[in-house]
Length: 352
Ligand code: MG
Image 1 (cartoon, rainbow, N blue to C red):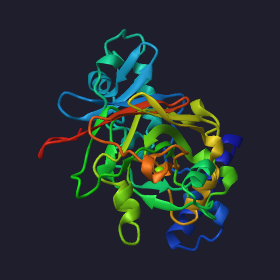
Image 2: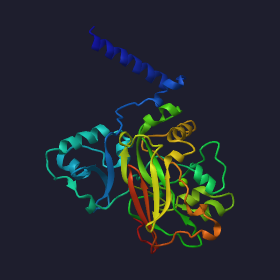
Image 3: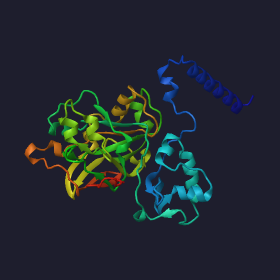
Image 4: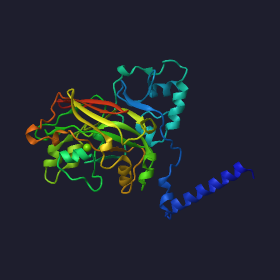
């Protein structure tokens, strides 16, 4: 038997043994837990900056940012008759980076046929149906200090739901005043998972990250903090309370996530200016901690907390809450500037 055939048989035997132990439920070796390894066709996204295009028919589909313009993945896939992931959820959850790379390569030499000018697009939601939206609270030293809270012993976790997901340049509908009026901004680094992560060590955690985005944990402080027992979840997940974008940037293009500048502007005025180096729990520690309690799956997203400068951190007599008409910009180094506005919407209007 030649070496390549021997290698093949050895690998097949190991893989088969792994499957048997998995299906019989007797696998005990934690570091070799099959969930801990990349299985199947999963390939991590590399070297790509992606966005979402809201098409004229209402679909929100994938775009690839190139020096020449935005590659419309849906248009290219249809014209070239090549299957490709049409959304970021599909790309990440389905592990379809190879398929996307083949499509991109197939468009080379075909001029500007599938390219659109970024200034001409309407942005769609980058994420529409992630399996989980996990949020970490109280994760910057200077933010904990400004609101008079001790540093937490472990990352405090809460969640948003998919109704909160919103696009770059969206409008956030202002709730009726009897529901909430203490509206506040929270610019946050968003971590996007690329592989199933369970029981990860801190040393291994960043290998499971697909990329990063600029995100916003928009907050209703009266719901979050002033209802009996503190309704954190309700105060964080009203419609469009999680705008994300404009880009998803693959992890290899970002490098160290624990050293990125963040800024927030309200109507042009600088309100937050910090750096992820002020994290209490860095990116690896957050992922490792979460993965020890429940698995993170490809396409799951993590909001990593906000730095100081929020309205909540000001003295009570200086707290001027956000209102309809306000325009907010969240900027994170290497990830771009997310913009959105607050709007009074008539009943039945679409928030998107
Ligand atoms: Mg937050």
